[in-house]
Image (cartoon, rainbow, N blue to C red; front, top):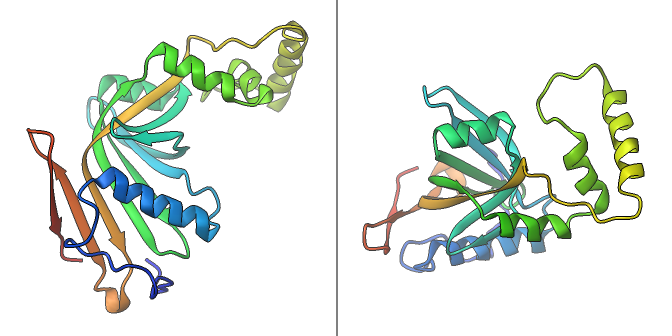
Length: 210
């Protein structure tokens, strides 16, 4: 990890002063990343595993976050979606360069409703809507021309009509069971604050050794 620390004037990460709600604490840090000018502050590493435990990870984009969890969208035929359907346990990692802050999230994942996916799909740029139809995500193709030809065909087909969300494309929501906030400190004595979800829906807060 970087030894830089650009948060000398920020509020220290302390278990006594963090927000008791980890989602609200996440929003504070996310808003700070946006205000800092971080490139793609919504980017997050999504780690999944097959039913047999074989792991994989990739970067996806956070679209919404609320008390119910962290939402992202993908092709339901993709390897990550298949892994999530097989094994709903997953993890997210955010890292904001310059702020030297990291957030780790662990929990269970489920598909969002078709209505929620439809509503989000309508907000996407038209080219992204057509792209969801054109790309057989993660499948082997002969070359880029295959995608470009499919896109041109779709542009003709949908010239005068709305692009509907394909059934194989939609959202997932990770409902957190643990959220850890990490902030760089000198001498690698970093601050780590962990929230753990309890059976009654409350969160415990504890400091972890770096």
